[in-house]
Amino acid sequence: MTITSTTLITPQIIEFPHPITLQNGSTLPSYQLIIETYGELNESKSNAVLICHALSGNHHAAGRHHPNDKYAGWWDNMIGAGKPIDTNKFHVIVLNNLGGCAGSTGATSINPATGEPYGADFPLVTVRDWVNTQAQLADHFGIEQWAAVVGGSLGGMQALQWTIDYPGRVRHALVIASAPKLSTQNIAFNDVARQAIITDPDFHGGNYAQHHTKPRRGLRTARMMGHITYLAEHGLGNKFGRQLRNEHYNYNYDIDFEVESYLRHQGDKFAETFDANTYLLMTKALDYFDPAAEYNDNLQAALQHTQAHYFIASFSTDWRFSPERSRELVRALIAARKNVQYVEVPSQHGHDAFLLDDPQYHNAVRAYMNNISV
Image 1 (cartoon, rainbow, N blue to C red):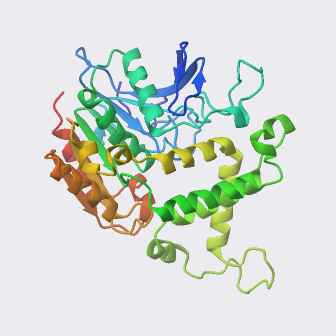
Image 2 (cartoon, helix red, strand yellow):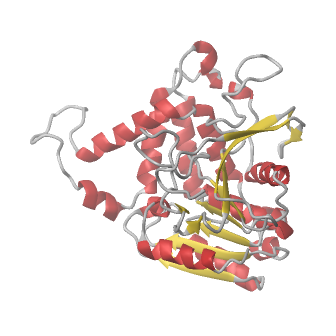
Image 3 (tube, helix red, strand yellow):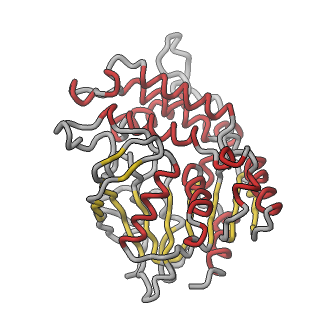
């Protein structure tokens, strides 16, 4: 089946009826993962590619669910027939991670012990937990080794963790606009976002579903602030400048500038579609990711036993996950004598550049993926 931007995709729910123990010691009695697949799995199951999503991502990365959908999946410009991750060659699997709010087991799911949504009772998960559940997903399909694990931002962290925890099960890892751990500044941004949600009067300690409300104001503010950090000053200035929404100042605290209108729209839209507890959980997973911590903060040592080949990409104006963080990873991989290819892409779009259709970036991914033998 040829996958294009207009192909109608039907998600699948995979049930895992056995208990799973998480890194924090909590146990879930069972769980489910919602996925989408694109392209055909070959007979030897050697052409499977796993796509790991970022903070607010999900399983819907390509095609459409309905003919009237306004937009295709979140990475439709990357995945499909003839695209950088070519579904004529690869069988692509994308999932909504455990703890997500798009169909996988998470805070909005029913807790079998209470018959109510988990809410605040859903345990925190880590990147390692995600990779472990993804490994069980691979087992479900009989995939012994991924041709590649690919991800941007938080997704890139998962790709990196895969190579450390399951070195024999990944041939290639594409780590895009990511980092081997968060900077102090990034941890601070995440905490401010969480505080905006937690201090919303409608949060109710995370059990807002029981009060038939949701912390929209906090989630809106968190998304607005996060969105600013995903963009570059130059690109934001070029798009909006100091353009007024009307021809004069209002002399109040309503919208004066177009950039304010844009951010409020993004915040409102996000607050209606995303779960606040999931947002808290995802940002904590970001904060906790630090594979070198188990090796006395020696990243080279953490990577010493990996077997994958690596493609690392960064973007010049990404100040949330700056090119220096990717170079740090590249230096550690070289010191560990690993095969690594690095590209630093000039861009005006900041961190969000990994989601956009940039010819240099896409050509680099396409060339790398074309050289993967299946």
